Length: 186
Image (cartoon, rainbow, N blue to C red; front, side, top):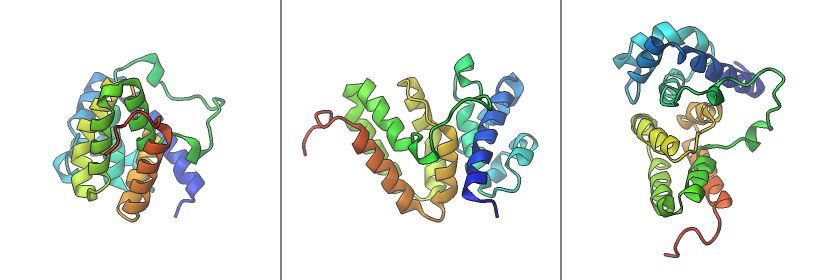
């Protein structure tokens, strides 16, 4: 079984691999066709993703994140980080809660809706969460808040085993990053 550090390195490599695949329009379309679908409903993804995800389990999480990455506009900004690019420590990188907060800070009128959406998804089972993620990712990207896909992959891989822990981390990150005056009092 891979160590935590090996998994994190794998997740970063996987995201870089998927972004490289997205440079080819046909591969991007194939990845996009997998959005929100069960593994058995998108066999074409296997050709592209079985090798990059092999040996790390959580196939649905890998395939879901690949389909979400295909939502990103193709820009130089989405190019993978080079081996010499510094990265913050893993748990200092933004999780989905941070991303929701960043979107809320940038688009203050959307803050309440983003908080409600985050609250809803943190109570979902994996089979219900995965199909909902494409809509959420598209909304966040439209608001200029790109998730850290590798961290999301790690969280989704843990979701089947520790959903409450991941959900709590997302909610805490959202509220820690949000200015106190942004959300109305209940």
